[in-house]
Image (cartoon, rainbow, N blue to C red):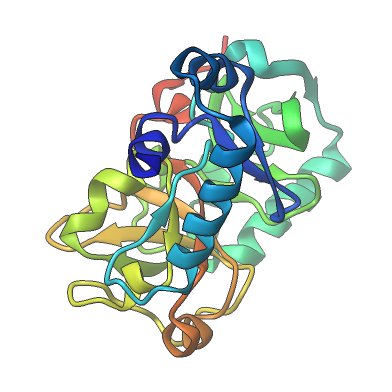
Length: 247
């Protein structure tokens, strides 16, 4: 029965600081109506997920609610036009992270067009030009392109590939487990290091379906082959994808 709960309530569970399992109030009410002990549910889920993370099953994804799953303009707390010095720093940081964008940087981030940084919940920042989101980052982390921008310039990011069976999980916002990248149909770039923004490709698909942030290097993903390899940051049809403009 616990497997049914994990599937049905996949958006209701999460880990705080990657250790303590927590449960949403809506799920608590549902379990109460079913007459199921919460302590039993939580202990069984903890055990089940622990076993999953140690498994070498070809494709394993841990459901998670990403920052953009239900993202909307209501998440934006402030929009600020940045000073010229800050604009230069942002441009340089993006150029350093994505050298392939340097030839078109003046078109993407024109020096004479106001650069807006939108502050959102959970320390999320969006970089906008003419109200169009182009990049995002968390706190002072690396800037990552939106998928719409990546589709325009598909060669700017390093790529990792999951197999065909993983697509529906990635598009549901699931983080990507190591076995999902090492199984047949998956592909790794050995030069990818830990804490690197990457494009998530899929077997048989031409365009990236997500943007991720590696938790370990590609070599470690291949060697360890268990646990979360890549955090799913932004994927097709999430809130950021649907927000073509922020007015």
